[in-house]
Image 1 (spheres, one colour):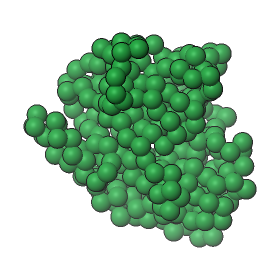
Image 2 (cartoon, rainbow, N blue to C red):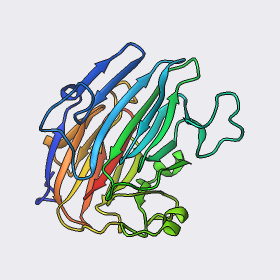
Image 3 (cartoon, one colour):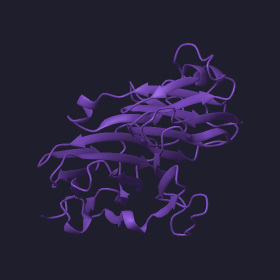
Image 4 (tube, rainbow, N blue to C red):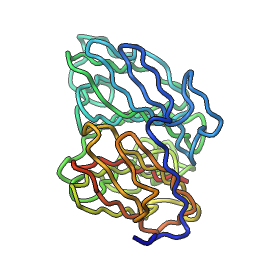
Length: 285
C-alpha cells in the first residue's frame, strides 16, 4: 500500500529494545530513560517523558512517594491498582474519589505533581495488575497539585479512538479559578497541563481506525510528535500497520515515533493480527 502521509517520518520502537527491569514483584518495560535505564536517544518525545508498561504482583506495589513538576497518569489494562493520597489512612478511606480510588480496567488516574504531592499505588488484590504509567512535562513549573480519576468506555474504544486527556482549556495562563474548574479542551476528558492529547482504541481484527493529528484541541499545529504504543495484552496475537507502511507494522509491546506531521493530518491504523489490538495514541507538541 502507498503511504497516505508521505511527509511523515515513522520510526518503530521495538518491544525487545526497550529498557527492562524485573524486580520480582515488578516487571517493567521502559520506552524512555527511567531509573537505572538510560539511553540518550530516548529522553522524551515532545512533552512525553515516560512510558512504562508495568506488571505488579498482588499484595505489592509502590509505597507512598512524592511527585513534583510532572503530569503523571496510569492507564489500567487488567487487574486492580489502588491509588491513595498520603493524607488518606488505610482502613479509613471513606468513599472512592480523587484522593482514593481502586482502579480497574478502563480507569485512568491522573496526578499533577506541581509544587509537590505524595501518594501510593498498591495492588491490594491477589492477582497481578497490568498498567501503563506515563509522565508528561508540564507547560509550567510550580502548578497546584491535583488528582483526577475517570473511567472510560470499553464499548466506545471499539468504535473509534476515544480521547482520554486533552489540554486544560484555559491554557498556560490559567487563573486559580480556571485550575479549580479544570475544564479540558475536549469534553469528557481529563485536563492535562501540556499541549498533548491521549487517546485509546481497541481495533477489531481486519478493522481500521483513523487518528486526526491534534484532534482539534492543540495550540502547536505544525511538526507534532505522535507516539503510538501497543500494550502486551493478547499474548502476541495482535498486530497493526500504520499508514499502510510495511516497515511500520507493530506487534504487542512495540511503539512508533511519528514526526513531521501537522494538525489535521490523518494517520491510519489497520488491525492485521489474529486478535483485536489495543492501541494508545500520545499526540504531543
